[in-house]
Image (cartoon, rainbow, N blue to C red; front, side, top):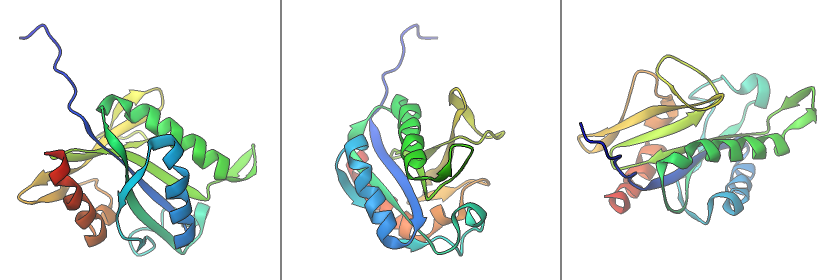
Length: 175
């Protein structure tokens, strides 16, 4: 067993951005630039409602979403701090008082490599690992046979043509 640690391989920082209406999504993508760096590419906007009703009680219907790529390649160890940054932005955009805040945007940062898409979350589950107190990461998609393939827990919208086209467009710059 080697006694030296293997260096991290740089990956692309991505963020899934969801809000009510396309303009709110596009504005939020721009709002992330001071935090994550220049927006270098994004998926086409898509209607999230057909994929899930999970967020409807909190955010309503008519949700639009895209996946965006930011800045230069990063080290994977930044994922926890990226999630904390997105939580702060979600909190600033929330409506209500401190006792009951309702999100108007949902942000899920992740790491895209030639081999996988890893997402950060605040929700614990058996397939997720802790990356910081109350923060978790999961492998959402694995690259195999020319596509990023879902796992049993993968969100359905990450299998959509809009997201798959975006991820495959990024892959050559990661190899």
